[in-house]
Every structure is written in structure tokens, then in C-alpha cells.
Image (tube, rainbow, N blue to C red; front, side, top):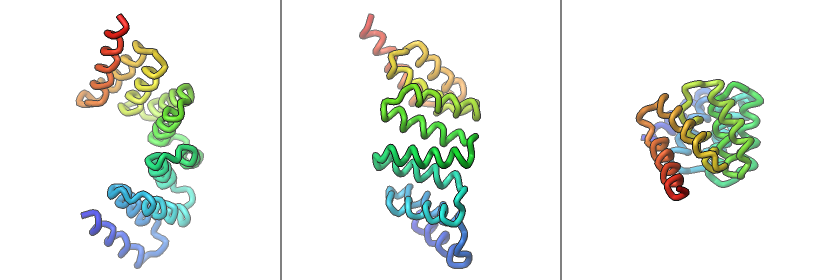
Length: 173
């Protein structure tokens, strides 16, 4: 159905060529199909029409991150946050890139901003836990994973991450 969705969005654009939301939605559909270059082009078209389209900047960052272009992803997330400073998802995504670059303190700050904006953001707590574990702060990591699970009791990744910490602790003792 993604191809049908893309055709519908293109039809909307043929009627209203400056319809940034349709370009954004095309970008999402391409991203879902793993057509990453096409996704970036669609998001950039949306941004050219609507420069302060924070969600489009964020999604450019996501695609660049998938492509391993971490510095460019940071630029995109930073742009999204300059437009919308209370964009919890962009803070979380920025944290993920910083974590991937080994900038763990900065990543932790980004995750903390994310859940200070959106207190029920289980993914941000889980990502904070991963970062704390990477820093060797195992008890604090378990606390972060537990917070994620208190928000989302069916969060398999957080349970898995707690298991990894307990396994690591077992190896140490």
C-alpha cells in the first residue's frame, strides 16, 4: 500500500505544488521502503517549501543516521531543535547519534532533556540506560530501564537490557 500512498501524495502535490506535508509524507513512505536517498529528497523538498518544518528536519536526521552520516544527522537534529526546542523525539534522536559517537555525557544530557519534556518517554529512559551501562554505571542503568518499564510494561528491549546488565554483573561477581 505504500506505493498507493505515494501516488495519493503525488496527486495532492499536482493539485497544490507547495504542499509541504505531502512531500513529508512521501519521505516517510520512502523511508518505510528503505529508499533513503528518495526519502531525503522528499524531506528536503518539504523543507524548501516550509523551512521551519521541524519534523522534516528530524526525519532527515533519522535517514542520515541510518546511512552512518552521523555529523550530518547531528546538524539535522540540531536544526529541528532550533525550530522546536521542546521536540522530545529530536532530543532522543540526537542522544542516539551522540551515543554512537561515544559522546556519552552529551547523549545523557539529550535523553534527560527528552524525558523532561515528555515524562512518559520510555524510549528515552531505555536509551539513557544503555548509555549508563556503557559508562559502567550498572545500578543507574537498571534504574533507567526500570523507569522505562514503569511507563511501558510491555517494553521487551528494556527487559532485555536489564538482563544484559544482570548477566554482566554475574560475570563480575
